[in-house]
Length: 305
Image 1 (tube, rainbow, N blue to C red):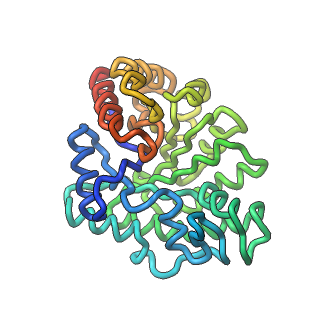
Image 2: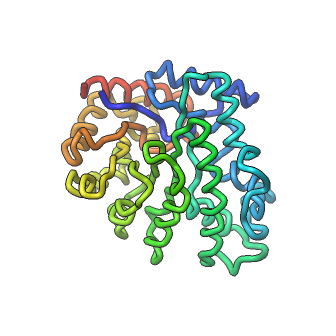
Image 3: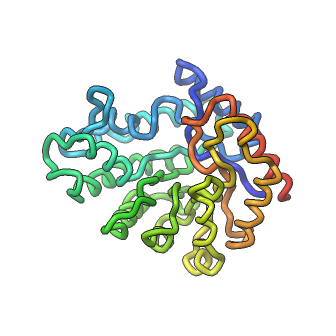
């Protein structure tokens, strides 16, 4: 049976953070999810870092670059590390998956609004290098705390002239992590710009996660195959159900999930699929549809057997 997980974010369950994380874990368990997350209950994927890193800030509701980027203090003081410790106190038997935002996605989001000092602008590559150096000890602290670390890099599917160098930054983040506890997730259409080829060359990231179920991501299946993954020693995280339905009628059925996973396993080999998951995070999904999506995903995995 394939392992199931979520990408990370879920709708907010409670105003109290500890209560929200507890409810997120119990919700995932009720949905039959195997590899659990904290639901990213404290903040969105950018604010976690913009509010905690030196050189980043949120001003007038938008993240900006204010100076040289780095940690404000020891990794143990970072919010995601503290939230992991709190979650493990509540659930000692849970080794959760914790998502961190990759250098390109975090840097582009903040720098596209404003770069106040230190860097020359959005295209200054040292900005992204500094983010990678700041993320590395955070990732290490999370892994040391018992977490599986997922690096989220949705912006990589947009294409960059220096894509190879940007992908290589992920190895800087993951270098000190146990290989069995790190993955990278890239949503969107990954068949362009050589995205898949660059990701397969990563030395310290053994699992690469893509979306396959959304309208824009359906073509991704044509860009993965057994030989590519086995030649590079990689496993695949398989996005098998869309996170963008607008009504219950649009949620993909268990039979459609089974079919999608069957196609994916047929392309890369079932033994090379690390886990099944929704295409992306569920924070922006209509809240009433989230349990239906996760139940249908679980049922589809069960149908696959």
